[in-house]
Image (cartoon, rainbow, N blue to C red; front, side, top):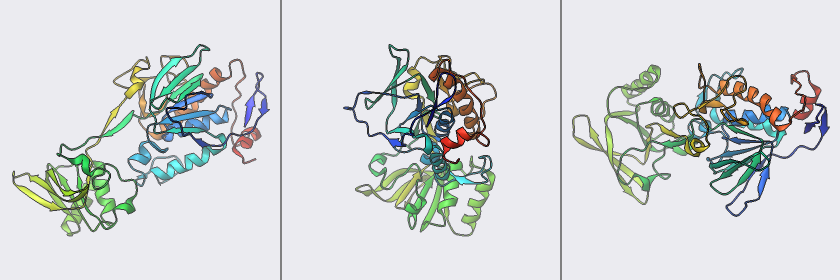
Length: 368
């Protein structure tokens, strides 16, 4: 990778490989880098690209066990239609393409870890410690943690924990895993309706239960669901699940309290409750940053927070007119990188270049 000297000219150094950290509580040496990114969702991943074009190396921390953020955690196979120049892609496909795009810049990932403590080191750099004891130092920290830590809203069903991960799932990661299953989906929002429609062709049987005959999902999805019910291809129940039946984590059926106050048993081997997610800001709230309704205010020139050297991009930030779109986060990452350069290379000249015409940038990308 090319680095810039103080006069802005490139210095020739080798590309680091993309790596995944295997940190443990015992591995506590400080790891130095140019930029620490909290969050490995699409916006955090694209930030690696924008930083890499300006010769900045990045380490990424994510509480999940893989990259992609909510795109891979919540809808890895659900289509996304508003990525520029990409008419349609799934959350997983978008993540895979971003990983391919940033490969030349060799980011290091620290998965399954939470950014727990942030403080200034003696040399003025930021020192971040995770809940597993990983310690990173850099002049720049970028918070790209979406809405924070995602926690599913669990239904108040006694003993549901015993079935989680075996028969009860709060997200669909691989549709094929549900082929031939007898599925009951609980909920009335977009996720519940979308997965009812997407899994219906794969399931042996599928039913939807909601506490009222009124849905918060897109009208087209509701109409499509009702059409399947009319055709006898699925069942719709107006009520709520109150109890589970089964042994050793294997579900055999549920008890539902219906709208008319009667109880009904329904045979199924899979329950998918989609009652939404609770987003918790987590330890980021203790970093000493100004907050606005659990979001981080930034200026729109460089997306820096109230604290110098700390930036916030993506859904976790706030400014007048903010739109929570992936493409907005991509724009924010580009402007963030311009200011981050000034912290990482103080005194160096920043030259704006286009990837279409700059042989230097094309060399970094491996396309020259």
